[in-house]
Length: 353
Ligand SMILES: Cc1cc2nc3c(=O)[nH]c(=O)nc-3n(C[C@H](O)[C@H](O)[C@H](O)COP(=O)(O)OP(=O)(O)OC[C@H]3O[C@@H](n4cnc5c(N)ncnc54)[C@H](O)[C@@H]3O)c2cc1C
Image (cartoon, rainbow, N blue to C red):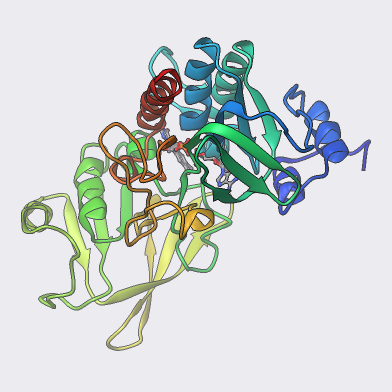
């Protein structure tokens, strides 16, 4: 194993469920990550423990590190979070040209480490709130912490269609804000007719020649849309948008890039292949918050509830980024990073009280 190149997928598989400390160090060193700290029991509480090293968690660590607070990040996968799954990012401020997203996150990670934050591989399984400190538990160790910032992010709900996983990032996108720009003068399909799906469809009309929205219900069915009336009206009246009613998506066509989709008419059962340049999917996000159930207040979909200063229901525990209610409506790296900064400043105030 030692002499073989390590792919991101291999590393992620390796990280799930856990690496032991020596494996983690070995793999991290081979990736050029000077990140892995000791996995042993931490006896002294750290000032700030951050769960998740995506844009929210790493930004929080920059702030708490610069405030001279001892800062530990626990990350179960690749530091950098969801942005490791995309090639280029064009809407992070400070760069005139598009930059590779994983490279950006390497820089953010380096910035957090420059201010003293340590990143440890570990999958947090529960949090035990306490009076003077909280205990954050992984299968390998327990970490006492005076404050905790929860930044576990979310995942777009994947399209349950044949070939969808293979063509993700190759013409099948889960983020119109991120990728719409690449579809100028193209014909695209939107799957999902909720508020986000219709908002993203209207956004995509700026670039695309046509946007076809696939709806699982017949035209006129009261359940056809899960979107507000004003968005429905705008979408219905838009000259570039058309609807295909009562259809399910069976498979995505293409090898190196999307070339079409196969739909099934839910009334007649007939299949139809539609040639297409790109597919956008917006059927919801799944927050990575199972480990918080029963401890931290979540909404009905599992997103973390906070007040406007990002305090959760437990004093000394804060939340930021895509896993939090409100931010999940935007699902953008710069929003998550901004929330990481707010949560860190609030944690600092809590520690200094
Ligand atoms: C394909 C794709 C392309 C995108 N493109 C763009 C773009 O161009 N521009 C843009 O602004 N945004 C883009 N986004 C959205 C952006 O990546 C997210 O909004 C942002 O990453 C959210 O940051 P976060 O820190 O809240 O969560 P995440 O990035 O999801 O990070 C959360 C981290 O927490 C870790 N974690 C979760 N649970 C645990 C646990 N129990 N224990 C330990 N660690 C845990 C995860 O492994 C992960 O690394 C894209 C997203 C995707 C999927």
